[in-house]
Image (tube, rainbow, N blue to C red; front, side):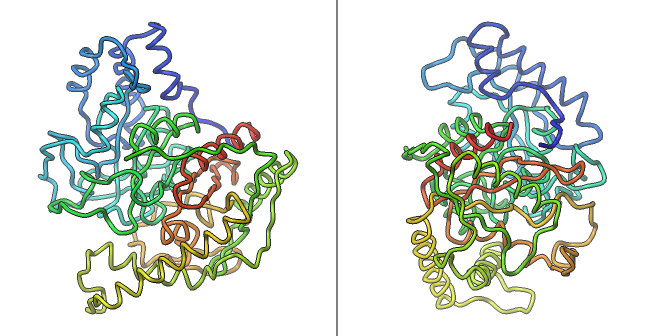
Length: 437
């Protein structure tokens, strides 16, 4: 396993200390603020700070209620979530002055569960990069290596967690934006099934309406138990939990996507984790006729993603997608869900890399202009999105957990399940994490 950067307690550990009266909510908040002030200068993760109001909120917390598992827990959220009185600009300079008038629903639910919001963490402009750099807040660096990105778009989220500043975070994912930062930074993240947690109040500045096509919101943490708690308090409604023992679980291991190879150090770290899962008695297959046509699904995903990201505006070629083309993509998405369901009738989960490589050096070029050499092949941004995109297009849940290292950099692995098996993805990832510890 990669070396941890912090031994700070997680969210549920802090909540337990408060319940045991070993510290007060205000002491927990003050300690987190002190860590941010001591650590964040060179990292630049917590870019919107709300310390005075956080202290006021902590002082008002007297005793935990029955539905407050996060009572007194200090945390931050991704900059794209509205928090009343704080700016929400998505890293876009033109929206620098956009101040939210009410909390996003996720923030409301976290506060209801007892959490105290200290501020917000950095993102790339429009949440559209695997870095966290913008003209408003500057650049966030990877706590493991300041010359590299922590990932994006929830890059500030992952950096704040990995460095120990906060025990919990909440982000969003439409192209790996939770799972890639978790993988690059050595933390845990969960991409939810589309629609199980509302993204209301996590909308592009100046818009307000339907849930973003393909886009989801989800938690980040430093362990699986915290991830499960954060998910449970923000769900729209209950989800079933089968929680099958690891030795009875059936896995399909996707070693490589047909459009993009995997960098050897990342492949080796994940393979070692998969071999440990096999040794524990689980079934792991590496070939199956049930695997969907991943290349075809990725082409459909990229088309839908490009339309969703610009909200139907003209693309780089000046063309606008027609309603007929959009409905064709919805049909393709439904077929993808059906194809994956056939695979999940045979397997409980798919194991896969979150990305083809570990954290890459900061790159001033826009994401569409980048290229990476992987295993002797040169891959562009569309290809490297393949590992994250396959769960997005079919609206599948996926948990990323740390499983090893590529040199000094962390390596994560996705545990992908069928739709609405979010809690099982996290439970299984937690069992894998315990096995590898």
